[in-house]
Amino acid sequence: MSVDANHVKRLLESDEPNYGAVVRLGPEVVPVLARLIAGPDPRVAAAAASAAGLVRHPQATQALEQAARSASAMVRLAAAGAARNMQGPAVNRVLHTLLADADQGVRKFAIKAAVARPHDSALVARVRSLQGSDSSPANRTLAARAVRFAESRRGGGGGSRIA
Image (tube, rainbow, N blue to C red):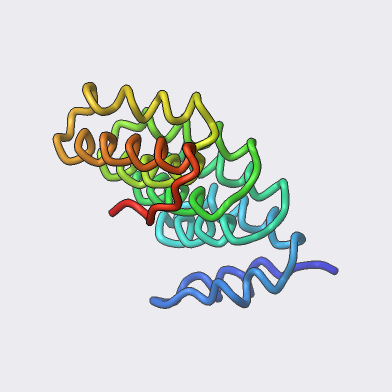
């Protein structure tokens, strides 16, 4: 089945993107999302990155990797938020990239996504390093809370999501 790129773009362009309709198009939508992520409109590219995080397909991680390297902080921020929804070890590369991002908002959402993977010791170690090195005091505090949360989950505690 061929996915109409203009249809996908229309679904994502509105003030309230229809992510459900995009996801229902199946894995065939991923190449279209990748093209939109690379496109000239950062708002559509950010919506495409968010949608990629909801598609259960290995190529969706490649689309997020592309979004994580975008010149637009809005697109990178969407990639960080989308990574929170994804499973599998491949998304950890995306998170490592985003944890080192120049934009403090991108790092904030990457910290939140990384803590959802408490069993990845490299990610937890990277977040731990942000406790003392992030240029944003709010991100340093968030990183400290995230590490405590990840350690409690690794130890078997349930806990809840961090702020």
